[in-house]
Length: 382
Image (tube, rainbow, N blue to C red; front, side, top):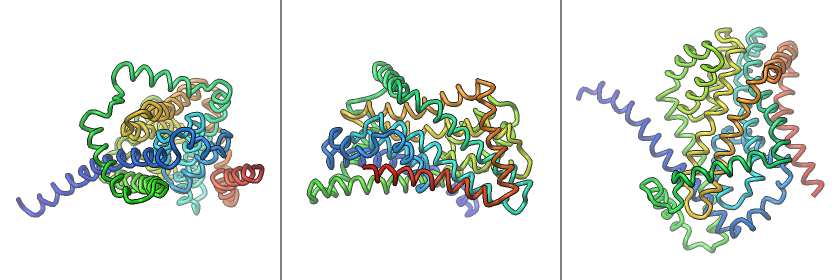
């Protein structure tokens, strides 16, 4: 084989091998964290005491925001949340964390919009395209968090759907099957490395190793998928995003599933909006699709869990999917609700383009100052 052809073949095969290995490591990592928490804290009762500080749903929400802002990946945070639920974190605490992760992930495209800050017209377009995602996620929280607090809406619905799926035989509790045997083998290998340690330290090491493996696997998975798909995804969205809201939502979903990062897909579209190639009314449905597509990672992560906690891990992943899907359906199908995110984005973009300090203050307050102060306030009261 000629060197040029050999290089081309390698450039096509290697990213796919990285994708496969990264997915496997992600599944093992989620299982490892769950095992670590159960070993460290003795199951559900211990986990409930550990997360007692987050029994206030607003603090759970804030923790989801801050964790995602700091890690810069909602996929990573939601995968960790799935593992924590498998380790005993109550679903009622995890659901507000999932909601917060949705808000935290939008900081990336807001930062991207500042690349246009020296060109006021472009910055106004880009900042509006970035913040429409913020306003949509905040509106979704205002609608669904009160329902969750009052009725356990998402917890009950996701629990019922999980039960239906189990009865259909889709969820395998026994741990059999090639994928789960492979994941179990990887988890067993990691556990064997900690066997010489006392139980207390072994549990902590498993949790730390699991989180590190999730961070690494999603980083490499995202990088490999970008190599394979981002160029095609950009062409695809330029073709599809302007063909109507339904097509825009579908294209946002597909692109996000392909690149495994809502931050990446929304950050792709912000510069296009800044340059005037795509208008806000086209950006908006695309970002809604990105919200739906990003839930695939948690659903994938949940497949790693076997044994007694498999159903509850699937439940939180399904709750994430339902929350994002229902948010799109409810908000976008009601005309006056649908207009709120775009109106808010246009308003803050106009102010931000006129006074750059206000744009910076908006970003710092929404993603850092307000969540941080709420956590400090809660700690002080305790």
